[in-house]
Amino acid sequence: MKRKALFIINPISGGKKKDGVPELIDQNLDKGKFDTTIVFSDGVSHARIIASEAVGKYDIVVAVGGDGTVNEIASAIVRSDTALGIVPYGSGNGLARFLGVPMNPQQAIQVLGTGNIESIDSGTVNGQSFFNMAGMGFDAHISEVFSHGKKRGFISYIKSSIQEIAKYDAQQYQIEVDGKVYSRQAFMLSIANSSQYGNNAHISPNASVQDGLLDVCVIKKFPLWRFPEMGIRMLTKTSEGTSYVEIIRGRQINVTREADGPIHLDGEPQVMGKAIHINIVPNSLKVIVGQSYKN
Image 1 (cartoon, rainbow, N blue to C red):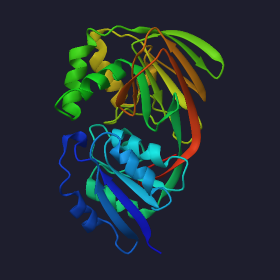
Image 2 (cartoon, rainbow, N blue to C red):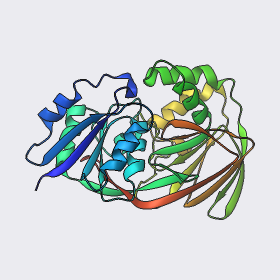
Image 3 (cartoon, helix red, strand yellow):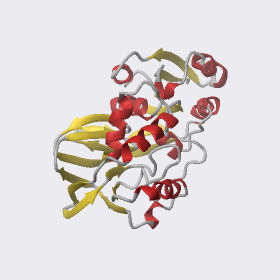
């Protein structure tokens, strides 16, 4: 029997046009295996609404967009029998890269036909789901700044980071991981399910989406002149080799910070209070992975 696949296309993700995507789907998806429906999302949370209505009606819901689009759709189908597919069109595509999904859209569509489905963990922050990375501190601040900019894409993100990094101060955090309390001053506090932010920048190289753990990555304030080194370390998967990065693994995480402020879930910012409650939800999302994915 054919499987029912719903493609949800975010027309603005990554600053890339998607007008030709329906034709790519028609040309590269095995029609003998799938009955397909294609819709374009329109505005914030629309993809989540569409995906919610697809649970129980479709075997696969495919996110055509970036990590934010993936988060919207995955949040709607998590803990269901509906599987997530990804055709990456974002700025970073962190989860897609980690799962071995090709960055070439045609190849990513073809991967959907392999039926190679894995169950992966998700995380929650104050009850809201994330699947790749959540965080507070500098990266959440940049996500907030970036969300108000007119230009999307990796270059615009880097420009925003360079403009803001010199004037951003580290903050004090009380971090409780599975009952053990740590007091840390951090420039950035990242909660990693996968190993990377996106664009193959790995903050926690040994992270796994199937180990039932989240990696709390404490990034300490570092001299501005070491910014290029930190970037190189993430690209070469050696971030744990510097004294500026500490990684604590656990299942239940409580964070208390000095003030309310931005936090991001898979790159999408919002404001939360001082108390942040984070949990792992093991084996909660079915997702189609690429051939290069290794558990």
